[in-house]
Image (tube, rainbow, N blue to C red; front, top):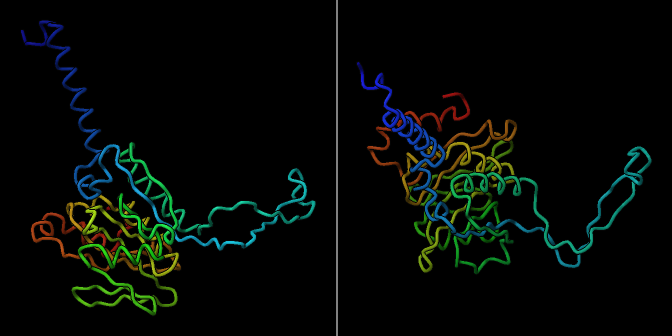
Length: 273
């Protein structure tokens, strides 16, 4: 008779335990893709800290008001104007949505990350922890100027310029560009990220792009610094987004192994694979 037909309970139990462990390992691998953890770096380390920097719109001594129904139980009763007291800060909706997407991305890999929200202006000298700058503001420009390697510059009128190739990506009517940058501060050695557009639509699209395509980017980049510039058809939103350039250029063996992923990102990233 066969081995299992002898009804050896220890053997059957061992095989069942091994199957459960293999399934758990497969699920863990799927949820915590090693290439994604490598790209996120210290953000994927347990008990790490990070600061999200947003473009603050609040002006001291300004008064903020909103309209609401006089009777909440009867919205047709008319409107009244209410004053917002003690408003600490004001952010745009696209920036807040971008922060939410990036937090979902990072927390899915490291649920023990501690983070804070700061204004890009007040946090200009903060380099003691990993930084993620969302949107076009002082902190984003400071990271691109101070961190290594220097891969992209922001020009005026609004445009991105790659340092190595001097290629210019300039915003036009109905067309925006977004930037995803990862670098390192030379003094503190902290990781610094910039996710921004030349306008709000570019910022939102860049955040959605890295959230949706983090695995492909991780396989093409590895764990090093990079800059990815995407183009955005503002009429289509994030569905009109494609990768325009990736700096530095992926190594030959990554292009060989993941060439289909690169072509997908640069042509039809939102089409089913």
